[in-house]
Structures are given as structure tokens and as C-alpha cells.
Length: 349
Ligand SMILES: [Zn+2]
Ligand SMILES: [Zn+2]
Ligand SMILES: [Zn+2]
Image (cartoon, rainbow, N blue to C red):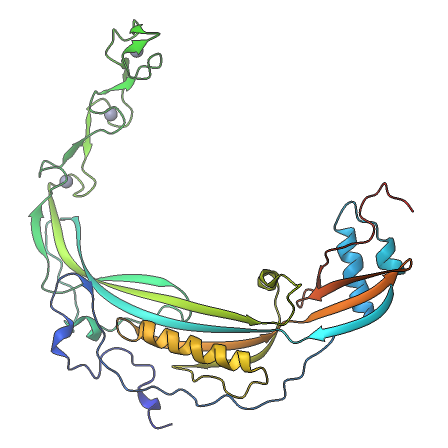
């Protein structure tokens, strides 16, 4: 692939856009970058779908019956199989791992000297920031150089102190009887003479009524600076292609399947050769949607698309002259049925 050289250098090297970064606020559009290595089409392979056996179906059904306290296990033991039919159920998942960068004003207590960040780059998208872990959400903040200044703390009007929240500046603990209202049973509280305060000094402020301002740590001054906020996000689109209307689709979320394809590159291409055309369509739509959604204000660092086969078998059986059915689904062999034949312990036939 011709463009593979730059695939992991999502910052730095090719930035010439003048618009991307004077200090300020808000998201910054990333500079353009070449089409990275996408790896091309996933290789055609043999999509071999397994089917569960009768004994596996029976074991699953027995397990299901025993997990419900008033289901008798007799039908599961005695049932006679009529038909086992496997349905091809596929879960398509697209993960798009993005990075976005924004500039935000921040303040922190001023410690006496202005810190000078050792950054060589000044344009936000030129600042080298290592990705902590692929496909995992994360955030990191970096102080931008030449943006900091010392300001009076506005939260405490530069006094370094703020009224104690616990006692509301009254220096004493609240009166237990009137709960600080000064009124007890429709009358002036006699325990605190209507002041709402007890005789005990407030613990939170040691009876001073004021506490150190948390914004400036009591210094009265803060350092205001521009922070580069780097956000990593794993964006997921999922689609389940299945054919059974009598099976609740949300149940698929609770089970795992067999991975048929894992295609991971800087950018992936739509899958075209999967036997179920719904999956191909889902892949095309999902990739298109994520590219439209993420290429302007963030960068796509990595993409991964997965196709899983989720086993789904419909089992038809007879028990005591009547016909029933159930589904076994997922690697976990979970069971779903609408009509378990013998439900209550007291209905002994
Ligand atoms: Zn009181
Ligand atoms: Zn207090
Ligand atoms: Zn303050």
C-alpha cells in the first residue's frame, strides 16, 4: 500500500494549516492527512456455520428448566425431537477510535511562579500526545505554552477565604431541635433562642465561619491558562442481521458468538463479499456514517470491524402428544421459549 508510511503519525509532521490554533476555546479542526493504509478488502474465506446437536439442545433445555424454580424438568428429559433448524444470525460491529482536540481556559491555584510548559509545538494538532490505549475512551489535558497569566481569584474576590458551607458562616453547628430554622413547633426555638445555631463550634471551619477558597487554595490568586484537551473515544455501531420475527432481537446483546472476521486498520473498507448481503450493506452504511461524522472535527486513528456468527437454533419437539418449540442461542447456549409445557410445581400430571 502506497500510503502506509504515515499511518501512525496522527500528529505533527504534515501540518501547514494556519487556521488551526490560536489560543482560545472550542474544538479545533484537525489538519488534512493522507489516506492511511486501509489494508484493502478482507480476504474471502469459508464461512462455515456450525449447528448444535440434539444432546446440546437437551442439555441447554434442562439447564433452562432447572434455573426456573417452578419449571419441571420432566418435559426437557422426556421430549422427543422433531426438528432442529439453524438460522444464520450475524452481528456486525464497527468501532471507530477517534481523537479530538479542543482548547479550554482553565485556572489553578497560583503557587508563586509561572510554570513554563516544555512544549516545542504551539499549534494544537502539532503537540505530540501518545495514545494511551487503542479502542478505549480517555482524556488528557496539557498546558499550552505562552498562554498563562496570574489573575485575582474571582470565586473569593481575591480574599482567599469563602464562607463555610457547613454552618453558612455562623461558626456554630446547626441546632438539632429546629434544624437551623430557629422555629420549633410553631414557636421560637427555645434551645437556640431562635438563632438556629447550637453551642458547638462548626467542625468544618473549626468555628471560624470561613474556609480556604478551593479555587485558589487560599492564595487569592490563580493561574489562568489555555489547556489542550485531548479526547479519545471509541465509537460503536452495531447491527444484527437475523431472520426470525418470533425471536426477540435484544436477546442477542446478552450472548457472544463466533468471530468470523476481524478487520482492523487505520481505516477499513466496506465488506463486499459476505454471503449475507445485509451485512455488506450494514458495513457500507456504518463506515460511511462514521466517516461523515468524524473526519471534520476529529481524527480517526483506527477502525475495527467484526462479524460474529451468533448461533440460533429453533428446536421443535413433542412432549405427551403435544407440539412445542424453543430457541437455543449464543455461544452460551441460552434458551428462549414462549411456552414451557410444565410450569408450576403443583401441576403434576
Ligand atoms: Zn433551635
Ligand atoms: Zn463552618
Ligand atoms: Zn479564591
